[in-house]
Image (tube, rainbow, N blue to C red; front, side, top):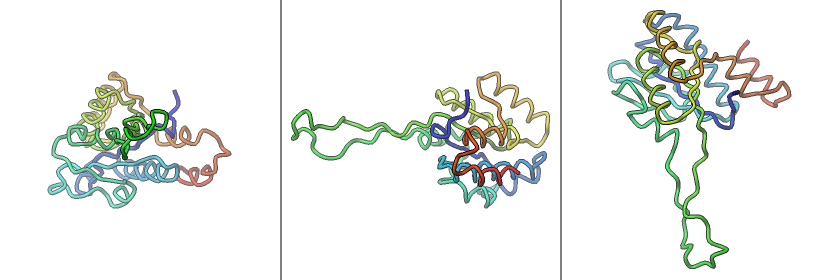
Length: 201
């Protein structure tokens, strides 16, 4: 199943300045996170960030933070336990006005559903802790989760790879940055194709 741009949201987990230097292959991982954020902005995909204990680990890298509509501070390792799920799936909004005073054929439904974007494209650090726990909880909440492997890492390759094995076994799709961008685009005649291509070259 291809990743649909109209059903996607992007979550960038804990690319914090004090954490990143300890992360394996951190420069490439951060560059791919920024590519994802720029592609999301180009294609009108909502993007969210998280920061683990920012008082101790500092904020996300400014290039990542600038690409997120909101950055959620957290103390739990899973951002789903700290309000991320409510950002990704907001409650239905009631319709204003006094519908009862109108004839039945003019009445509006009691609530309008929020735009359903159930595919979560997620990347971050550390892959075996905050990224893993967030992704597993989102799977439990019946989101479709795509983990962008080349934008994730841990302090060691072994921990990173163990996280990918566990996530795949739990039902997450393992993808790469370029897979996401080209699946969001779908074809080379898209208006955004040239700009998106520049991001991945």
